[in-house]
Image (cartoon, rainbow, N blue to C red):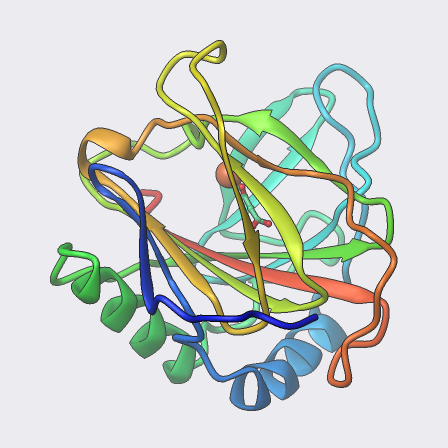
Amino acid sequence: MTRLFEDSEIPLAPGAVVLREFASGEELLPLIEAIAVAAPFRHLVTPGGHTMSVAMTNCGRLGWTSDRKGYRYSPLDPETGLAWPAMPEAFTRLAREAAERAGFPGFAPEACLINRYAIGAKLTLHQDRDENNYDHPIVSVSLGVPAVFQFGGTKRTDPLKRVTLYHGDVVVWGGEARLAYHGIQPLKEATHPLTGACRLNLTFRKAG
Ligand code: SIN
Ligand code: FE2
């Protein structure tokens, strides 16, 4: 995959920006592996009874989870009954620095959802609205195989922008973009030297 020229910051909308190659995968990937030993990736079931194609786990004081009863943040991993693994300092720092670069200083997330996409996995268009308030941005880190990110407005029918997210890219959306619809198109066949045929995503939120 070649990119002919590089813009280090790509605006998506007022309050939303892609920061190209902002994160170091080499630093983050071993931390993700250690988290997944304690809190294994799993395919959650939605309230509608659909098993998600993306496998998920969490670190931090709160973790996002779903079952037939609904979506929620929980301090315990329902799979193990234990607290989620602690959020590594490198994660907290990265999230704070990315948010600050995007114009949201002082971001202190206590929830980090870790998404793992195999080839073909997707995340349909949705809003992040399970948090207690929307004053804080979302910081989303892409690692491994590239994926097409869709980003729209606050109505599902608003026009979508599409941008390919590469290893190390970070997207931040907050302020008037906080409730923008977004999603990931089915992951196209590819491999990345550090992750193989897989994409990982870290999504940082202030949830409680
Ligand atoms: C999300 O919408 O929570 C994750 C998006 C992504 O995987 O980039
Ligand atoms: Fe989301």
